[in-house]
Amino acid sequence: MATAVITGASAGIGRAFADKLAREGYDLVLVARDEARLKEIAGEISRLHGVSCEVLAADLTDPEQLAVVEQRFRTGPVEVLVNNAGFGHKRPFWANPVEAEERQLDLLVRVVLRLTHAAVLPMIERGSGAVVNVSSVAGFVPRGTYSAHKSWVTNFSSGLAVELHAKGVAVMAVCPGFVRTEFHRRMGVDKTIIPSFLWLDANDLADAAWADLMRGKAISIPTWRYKLIAFGARTVPRSLVARVSTLGLDGRRRG
Image (cartoon, rainbow, N blue to C red):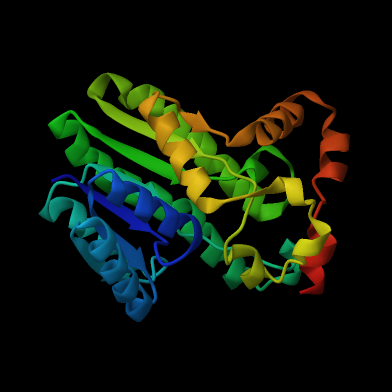
């Protein structure tokens, strides 16, 4: 049976991808910091779907713990990697300690790069495999370091998708908007100021992303409304995009 590695698997989009891939018949390697929670989720998924769930508790911003996860790609075949682990800051760049900004950079960029590299080398040798990097529609708009990091993830993924297509390896960036998960609560976002039509369901997102991966897409943007937002971000004047992109910032900074 094929195996999938999912980071940030203890909640939200990561948990949704874990359930989706289990339904598709994949054994799972679940990665997150909270070992107790991961074990609980692994038990639930195994009971529901009859797949094997391995737990790897790791803080991916710690080089030694990251190396343990990288090693997993060398100890047994992994057919799918979902790079989902991430977090956002509730304060603007200049109000955060530079160490906190560096930690976000590490998790959203360096970890994605390293785990993707670890995953694709054996995939290229086998001539099959897929990497799904969870980015964000925020990467299409100017909105601080989080947006900058996600812009990198999207461009990195789409470029790599072109390079690896002929080798049988698929790479795709998933670019959601606001998703009903713990992510925004942890940031201190006031969800009431965000229009209800912008919220997405994590399970629907995972289903749509998987369908896009099967279609060979390099970038997956869920729902027509976020496709329009991404299109507008590329075509309307940058000054207008910057003003519109402040949606949710006031609520975030009150947190």
